[in-house]
Image (cartoon, rainbow over all chains, first blue to last red; front, side, top):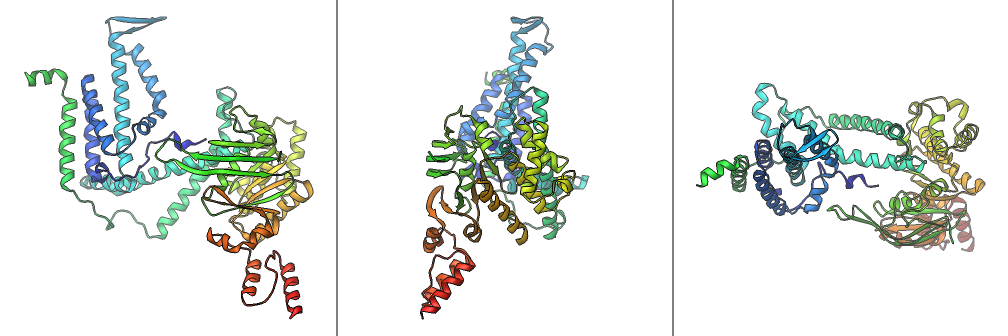
Length: 276
Length: 285
């Protein structure tokens, strides 16, 4: 019974690594570029390169690959669902038939495309987890707020958005802990969550969900009160203890990230043409 | 064999992750039926982890735990029987209330046991009376409309309605006002004395421990630091202080008197005993 074991999204792993020391804005920019690149990539060679670069980042950030992969566990179902759906219902006409499943037909092209989309999902999760693993929620919010600041004139409430995000991130582990505690308390009263049909299992969750919501609302109330008590009033004229500043290493990192994202995104044929 | 028996019990949280933490290391402990044991120790000493092994919410990473003869280090152990026999009241148990009425909430456990309606009714009324809540006045009310102390008692009743032989409580009086504290602790004492329940009580209050328990187990850094009868433990004030714990206020008074040269008995646990000890010391002078 250790829920925190299975949910690694949003978790920060404090380390003394070059990746951790980067300015959060650099990391946010890199992740944004790579996310776009992941959607633009046309063939597997792009993903191979991405995997290589991400591998380098993981090593530099001193994160164990096993821990990173464990973060994929919550999306295994989504991943399988997407891949299977894409194999049979991709809408691709023709191609080499690999196998049949009743009326369903799997072609080589469809399977490849399904795997491709699977890679895309994994890539997205890994890239974003790397950001949260190496950036403390505090830095992350600061970074987002500063990055959104130019859009404030357009009415984007940068500070408020950033604050909402920090609070949400901050409470993931707390709520998980709370859930675990309530599950245990109800198990101690004879609750069983793994028996019966879907309906019974869903009903068995009521004794967990009700207290969880009650406590989430209570926490929200308390937090709002604590913020008010410390005269919190949003972003105007708010100063901070640690100002963000770009260092030379941020320049290098940004350059590397930009080059890498262009490299991922260029299709194989373009490379062929460029190299010959 | 004792009712609860841990041998070389070790528990590691989040094993194999960067957040791995050893909570218990090599705990050997046995608790006999019918005793009242106080579990003391600074925050993070492993008390809560230990008690969760007593009803199989946690399983040992290594070592063994036997509860009522059932070996809980076996993955296929009969967990259901153990949970029926060992009632666990978590810290702030009122946070687990969820039903629409007090009656239904207390009935949750017995219903999970699959009991007949009349039996459930009896158990709920009995459990509510045990914690000093009138089933007729409160039964139909929403648990969320009660005061903090009442909610706490209803939540404890929810565990008592399972009719366990062992009651494990994690700081049942935390955050209550003095009167609420005394009431809850008095009810726990009654359960122990009149119904013969084995009680294991986690507490941070030395005075509570002195008032209630027969035996004290002190935990520190995941290990059993001291284990023995109450008087014997509180005689070792310096050792307790070295792990950040104290002695009951009245025991402390006696120790101070001794330091000033008054030859009073040091192992005093209550006001009456203190009065007798001082009287004795003064009379000899």
